[in-house]
Structures are given as structure tokens and as C-alpha cells.
Length: 95
Image (cartoon, rainbow, N blue to C red; front, side, top):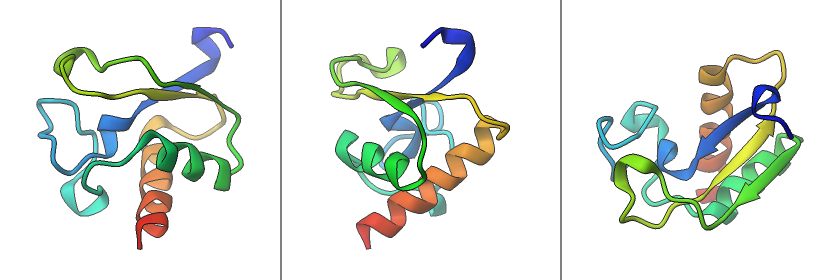
């Protein structure tokens, strides 16, 4: 996938134990503590998103923490809306 055609969703975007400054992208009420990459992949698959996973990558702002991300083929959704959909699915998986 080319970089223009994808959105990158880092695991840290959905982590309630991380501050906004460190990389969390959503309000605390929409996030979960320490989401795993497997949960993120599972949430994306349930939403029928085309993904590519990268396990060894580390988020630049907190390079010392384990991370990883998924690349999602762009759709008509804005990134913010996509983040909210995936976060909702992550909460559903956790409960």
C-alpha cells in the first residue's frame, strides 16, 4: 500500500493510560487501558477494514514503549470518525 492511500492507526491512540501529549488521540471515556495490537487488529477486521499490521514499530513520541500499528486502506471516512469507530469496537471487544 502506498502512504497516500492509507491511514495509520497506532495502538497508542486508543490507550487511556497515555496522555494526549504522549499520543492519545481520543477522550479518556472513549479509550481503554493498554490495548493490544491483536485487539486493534480484531476490531479492524470486525469493521471489515483492509489492513496491514506492523508489530515492531514504536510510536516516535514514546519510543521506549512497545507499540505497533495498523495501516488501513483509505475510505470516505475522516480519520477522526474512523478512530471513534475503532475505539467503540475495542470497547465492545474488551467488555
